[in-house]
Image 1 (cartoon, helix red, strand yellow):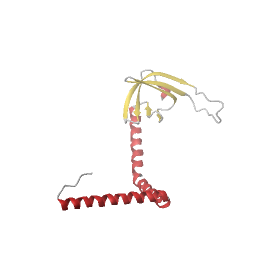
Image 2 (cartoon, rainbow, N blue to C red):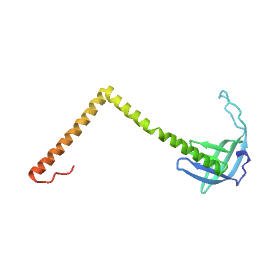
Image 3 (cartoon, rainbow, N blue to C red):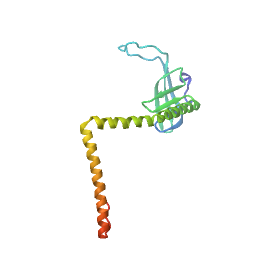
Image 4 (cartoon, helix red, strand yellow):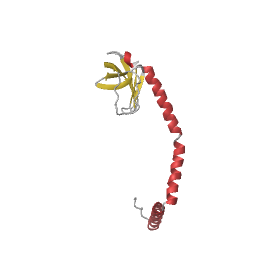
Length: 163
């Protein structure tokens, strides 16, 4: 539990945005009662919180408001996951892999929906429909021009210019 950590204890930090796990040393621990904003309705007491500071190489990272009785904490805004032991960090890696695999499984369905929405926009928006038609006509004209160049160069025996 975070409240039982002492100075010099080892913790593991998972860097979510650049997948790696780093072991750090606790340099300070402070367990205290949480403070609440009296203007915030329904503020509930959920127990003690612990603030720790961890040293990893040349970096010092503060972690504030950790639930004192917890063994892991997630900090999505920092892209960090803190665990009191490396095995908990590895379990979070497995969880992240499963979540990413699940997300990737939905990609084909989302691509199909995207194409459907694009087609709907072309069909129902006259401005977009005209623009798509213009682009199609321009591509056809470029193809015809390229064919004409090839025919002329074959007839006159010269190499066509590359575009």
